Length: 171
Image (tube, rainbow, N blue to C red; front, side):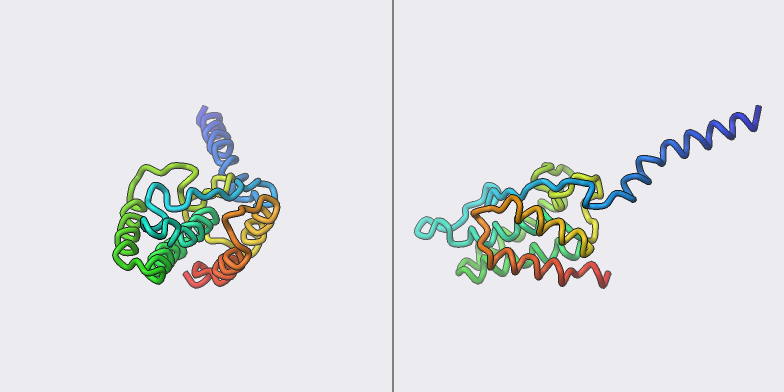
């Protein structure tokens, strides 16, 4: 009786772990990525009344990083970059306000699937998965297959360079 119970417990345990094992073994080649989408500054103005798109490009680049995801350090650096970009666009007060809003939003337990960190990934890898070279190649391939008119080539190249110089390697 004990042997049967032990067998059933082991069988149940192993069966319960099989989806976890499959997710861990799954490569980005097997899991399709969601296409990149931007909503610019997510409910925040993209510029001033006189210059309505003054920092819109900052938000698009931030959305690229949100799409790709990465480790927590990459997330903080992405948020810091949008702050610096808006500040350098000539709106230091708005930059501080936007940065505080983004950082406070990152602490919220409620996440909108299409807006959360690493929203490109469909394979259940989690919010803060360090990106490896294959992941970055997959990101580039997906974007090239479904490009966004909102992302100039120069911006996309800067984004890829940032991913390849990913801070997660040293964490």
